[in-house]
Amino acid sequence: MVIDHDNVDDSTSTEPVMEKIHHHDVSSSSSDCESEKHISLKKNRLFGRKKPVHAVLGGGKSADIILWRDKQMSASILGSVTVIWLLFEWLGYHLLTFVCHSLILCLAVMFLWSNLSSFIHRSPPKFPEVILPEELFLTIAFSVRHEINRAFFTFREVAAGKDLKKFLMVVVVLWLISIIGGWFNFLTLSYIVIVMLHTVPFLYEKHEDKVDNIAGKALVEINKQYAVLDEKVLQKIPKCSFIGNQKQQ
Image 1 (cartoon, rainbow, N blue to C red):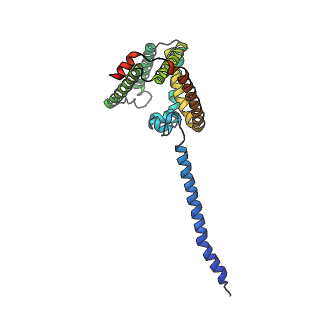
Image 2 (image 1 turned 180 degrees about the vertical axis):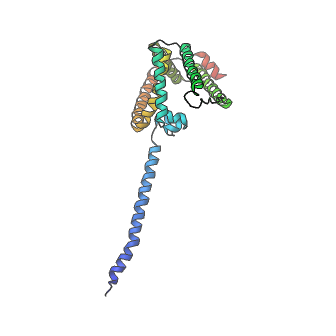
Image 3 (image 1 turned 120 degrees about the vertical axis):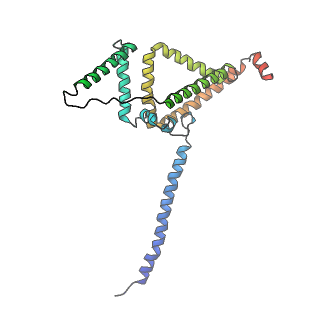
């Protein structure tokens, strides 16, 4: 039996070459993935955010509910809110009447279940001991306090007349809110806000790139229009004398 040494040497010599080519392909593909991730992180996101939507919303149970990660809980909350809105808006229910009737129904069911459990050969219901934690209320109070203080700071900063752009933005937002508030009552407006809270973030996360692209183009156009308005109108408005005296002091 004759062994062809040339073929053996060629096959053994090509093995490390193929390994190097395979290693190069793997490394290049991984580098391409890393570059794609780096490019995606560098995209101009809405409101200049650098975190995913789930992290921006808190990253906890509430974010899972808003983004429909927990579909059963999200559907339950949205369905319950819809039923309550229909009761108040269409059937003319009042809040105090609704609360009293709900408590009467719950108490009647529990009372009958506790007394009839021996007749139907079932164990009586076990009522859980509900104790609201103090930390929860402290956290809510601190959060509300922080938001109120930030609102007061923004109001004082806008009222000081130092930033005309922020002043116009606040006036436009308040004016739009007043118009929307005239169209709906408080209950309907609250229901619309809750529905939007359960739909807009979910749809935004699903079509994130498209929305960011359109929002970026719209923001560029708004800045151009504001620059023209600032150059032709706002800069020609004389500033009040007391603002200049405050700056000199």
